[in-house]
Length: 326
Ligand SMILES: Nc1ncnc2c1ncn2[C@@H]1O[C@H](COP(=O)(O)OP(=O)(O)OP(=O)(O)O)[C@@H](O)[C@H]1O
Ligand SMILES: [Mg+2]
Image 1 (tube, protein in one colour):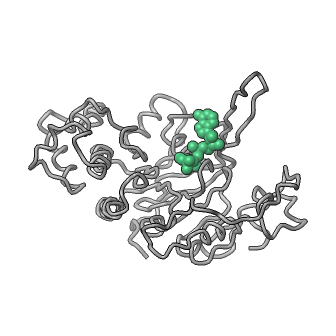
Image 2: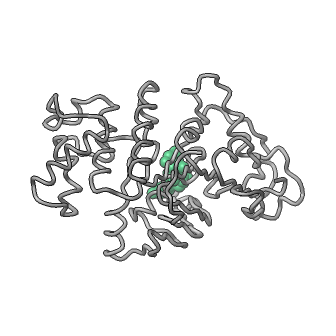
């Protein structure tokens, strides 16, 4: 078991979160509603890494964006450090001072026309961290934390002059600068070469252990999830279908969807363990399933009871599953 915070205090609680998007149809064919996040609840302890895993479109990034208030939820609550984060200016400021996001593409977080020193120091200036000297010192400090130094004048460079791995480490340094207690890392290594993914994850792991920073690690890659995470929530079409201690869930998966995700990992090279490859699941698309189990149209074990929606229930210590077979 990896090291988690000494105190079992929640840094983040998500309660019954829901979000729908309306997609406007082309040629006035009407709008369709996408349920991106459906009654999702989970919590992250201080110093803990919680993984949200699931295939493309399952709602992972939407949850991250709701936490940071770049979009609002339709229902449910985000509780950070025991305070409900609503849409008021003061709460938005509070969450953004304490929680930072790293995205898949570094260019989503940085301005390509800014020098590295300005990119890293920008959050420090926005949040009035200190004097110019104090800000400069902090920039050098976080550069070292992400295993870069200024010997080649990296601070005077522009993002395009760096390698992909260096650029993503600059994004991490920028996130780290204001000493956040939670970092939402949304597929932070999936655009990097396989050879440098481990290096970036190792740096994040060191930061988590050294400063007890909590992480919400969003990924569809179960291999890196298991390397970095302590708890996991498996998302399918906006719902958590299985959740718990990462070893319990991944070594003894109970939900047919989690089992399918894991079975999709047939690659002996651990660097290639991407679940997006091909998930072999049943096609029950002929059945009409509106209120029952969300996985019914794909489940190889479908039976009558699945017309009722299974709730996420405790099946074991630190292990929850939403399936009647578990
Ligand atoms: N701004 C938006 N407007 C309309 N639909 C949206 C919007 N953002 C997300 N969606 C839809 O919500 C669902 C969840 O999207 P989300 O980006 O959260 O998935 P994801 O799990 O992060 O996927 P990926 O692994 O591809 O990043 C998808 O069906 C997506 O098309
Ligand atoms: Mg996403």
